[in-house]
Image (cartoon, rainbow, N blue to C red; front, side, top):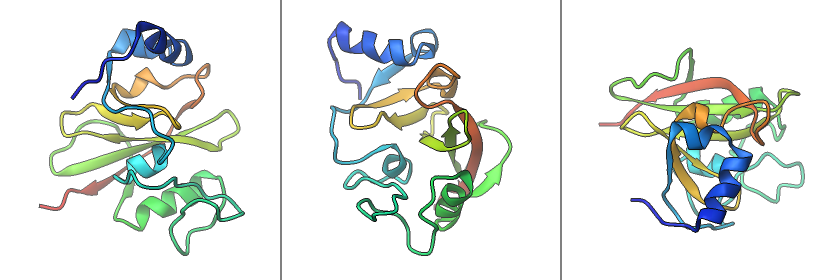
Length: 155
């Protein structure tokens, strides 16, 4: 499904993520602040996930509420993800990419779709289907991919 937005909205997205225009993308949901990219990568769209110290947002039990790569990896491991070394589509596997900023702090997560493209929730804004490199880069809000994880797809 693709949702049409005004060209001014798409221009804003492409300004923040210059790789989107070149790699192709489509908007797949309307804006909503109800959930974020981390929740979306866990296939949830009813609450915001973040390891905040004040426990305002959801975070899995027994996973440190620290904004570091190790805590994020542990959260994904709780539902069967393991680290892997490439973002290639693999039969019977689902993959997640964790992005970090220049300081190594997690900023974003994207989930691979069965067609090999990726899906991301852009903060409180829209969901998009995109190529992984479309949202990556030093000059983007999300930085670069630091870890790919995968898990078997339940059949």
